[in-house]
Length: 453
Ligand code: FAD
Ligand code: NAI
Image: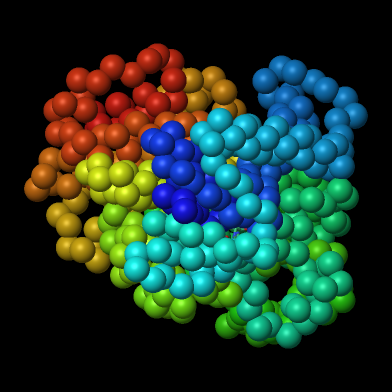
């Protein structure tokens, strides 16, 4: 009998197993595919490895403005993918080693919850039945495949791709149509656009980047357009065929050539075929409902990560896993979501945390905003010729606290945590003014913005 059975070996699952093992719980981890889940194998790390190569390529090609000239600069997609695979293999083997050190038993196979009787939860994997006192469901999410005519056939033929296949292309397609201008769509537009594909993004909403602040996402879109990426907003894809994508908008029907098509219209939690109905786990709109300790409606059954449909982000999964394990161990812990950072690793990077102007208006928050060009930072000026980066700080005027920070520009992904800490700690503006930022750094833009309130 295990103290804990973890179903799914992605960020939520492997971190929970590591923490549980460390605390002395006998733990089983069931993974049907690869340890590391989507994030390590076909998500966060592969995409960031590709984007880093694109950044280096871009710098080498356009170094003249910084006084550096390189000739015959090329990017070798096969070599980029090979390096990506090396990075992934190394990270995955590191996780395996940690799990082993924490005495976690790994089962390779598809796990299915069988039943729960007298406090014992049974899960089948391959031909075995495992018994556990507690269960963590961490089965993650998968790409949504919308019922657009031609998409299924395209997927079968390898012309329509999801995040899984697009990260393994060893040749840069001449033309790439991206259906969905959200996070995956934009990151892949950044990579393939830089590598020379003619990229077209077809998005059904009137803006890109989902819930990101509109003022900032509009600047990002302009930066993309300057790089030659074409956007069709308010547009609905009607059909995909062997060489094109067809779509409609208020101006009529259109066709755009597509050697490859990326499907990035969102992801859905994996809750089917895992036996949740055998123990009556409560679902809402396809995701598992939990409280803020990660507990489902069934005693001793927890869920964490993408499967709960709250934030489909690896860092959310990590923290939810920790909270769930701490709760199992009787340690007081709770999930707080108000300072959850989001990053889009495009060039320029976009990062944000907390409220947007749109959510402030919805919630009736009495807010004030400060918008400054990143050029107020000397480091940004030194490193970004012609950069159009921005910071937007949103302050709750009643509480006298920062409640939102939105950044566009190099290092945004690294700086956003500072804003997150300020928001999480609910620091008063006068206290934030007393923080000392290292000089010269782009993070000083937060200090500049604070003094402009
Ligand atoms: P997953 O990583 O989906 O892992 C779930 C695991 O469960 C999988 O390995 C699956 O095989 C396994 N599983 C499912 N069912 C069973 C079963 N019945 N039996 C056994 N095993 C099973 N997030 C970020 O924070 N930053 C990023 O930069 C970022 N980039 C991304 C880029 C892309 C292209 C994609 C697709 C996602 C990205 N994400 C990013 C999101 C991130 O990958 C997810 O939020 C994260 O992987 C969620 O972790 P998880 O453990 O909940 O689920
Ligand atoms: P997404 O939700 O970010 O974006 C999907 C986009 O597709 C939306 O803008 C939506 O309006 C649009 N759309 C939906 N149906 C459409 C249709 N039929 N035609 C045209 N457009 C359509 O989802 P995405 O990009 O698939 O990513 C999934 C999740 O993975 C993200 O929400 C995020 O949580 C995670 N992720 C995180 C990353 C990061 O942290 N840097 C990177 C990549 C993914």
